[in-house]
Length: 298
Image (cartoon, rainbow, N blue to C red):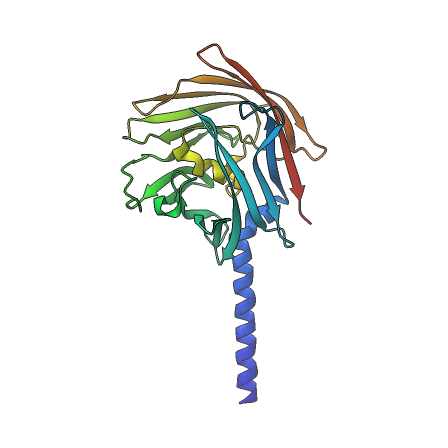
């Protein structure tokens, strides 16, 4: 009887350890694999009437290097900066759950055993409450994310379709996203997109360009970019320029061009600052100097 009892304890303990390893791999794998994570992105003047640095996101971590909270702002292509709120992170096996300071859920991310993001539920637009949530499915081609689909019926009375939600195209061999297409809110003929062009001669170790913007219905995608839970959203080469365009009744406000320059890398090859210059059809010119802050884990 004693041998059977000891054997049962060994099996139970082994199973517990296996589950813990799987859990950690599922919801904390990307940060540990990358060793470093961008914790804040800021620029002066991205909100009108301000001159000091304004952060689009700021992250905090717990003692085990897991994301603990993220303070977020979002850019809207028509109205500039919109909303800001803090999200606290809780964990379940294979899940990250984001909860606002008022207790309302904003997003639930579901990961596979390898740490790949598979499905999610999130408020849409992201700044609304949980009653406006939608379900998302992540489609991969090889190792790269190629599409994010909205699945099932909306949980709210909102009739918008957003078809497709996000589609991504890549160049061959360089691991750079060359085109990001976002579906419109009225029909599949309403689309916006960003075309990206790169400096093929420079490959930093790690980087992020958080200054992209669509309408407010696509803030959830940029939230995922802030989180760094989809490594393929980091390009392999330095970004040189981009073009924003679209078509259909839901496209606004107009096309514009961006140039990226003055890329500064730290001693480890991480992008820590760059200059972004935007040219609009109204002959308006806007220059922003971005600062990217990083932390590295033991």
